[in-house]
Amino acid sequence: MANETKKGNWWIWKVFWILLFVTAVEVVLGIIKPPFMVETIILGTKLLNHIFIILTLVKAAYIVMTFMHLGHEKKSLKWTIIAPMFILIPYLLFIIIVEGFYNHTIM
Image 1 (cartoon, rainbow, N blue to C red):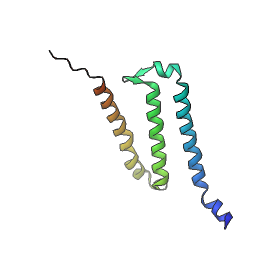
Image 2: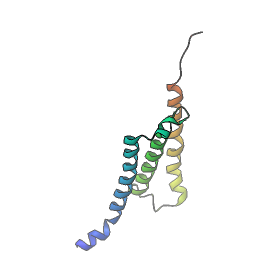
Image 3: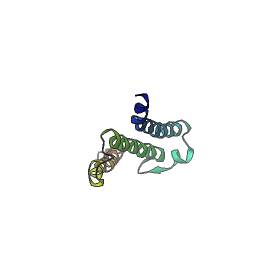
């Protein structure tokens, strides 16, 4: 029985280590804050923020693929569910950044 359990839950440890690694990279970047990532501005925000957003989207996609059991589905179904996340979230963040820098002046 114990041997069957070890064979049956190997995937959860794989998921754990992958998510731990990506989270550790995010934490280390947040602590170190490499100067070239902080000083480089793209679309009105720091490169480091873009890296955090990308890593968070990758983690979210991996979690959806694993825990919603989409990893074994057809490629078209995967992209139907994942693509809006990779399109809409950056678009909404762009809107927030642009509107955050808006300075209303009365003429």
